[in-house]
Length: 98
Picture 1 (cartoon, rainbow, N blue to C red):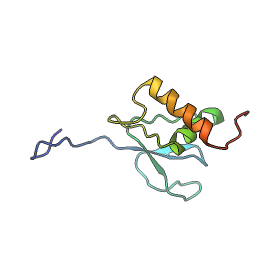
Picture 2 (cartoon, rainbow, N blue to C red):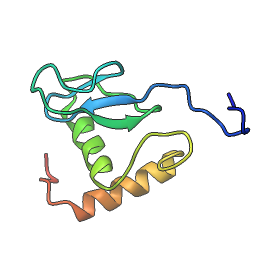
Picture 3 (cartoon, helix red, strand yellow):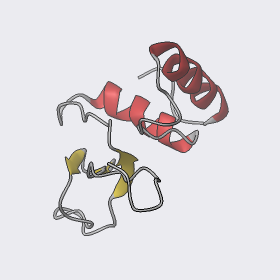
Picture 4 (cartoon, rainbow, N blue to C red):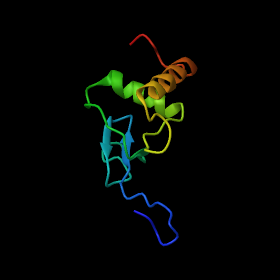
């Protein structure tokens, strides 16, 4: 969809996530569990199951490395996501053996 000047308008709502509570929403801006602001992860973010600690930790590392799941930037391919995850894994002092 374009506006009157011919610029693209993004109509998809972003996914908002709380890494502490491991939940994702589209329609609220504060986590209902811990009452902290949710993090905008982009329109292409897909949250793992709440009990999947490994994937939540990986997504948090990607976020810490500057990754967002939007259609126009960041990890648009699996190779980009793997490179971003490897850089985040190397640069952040989170326990790597769990």
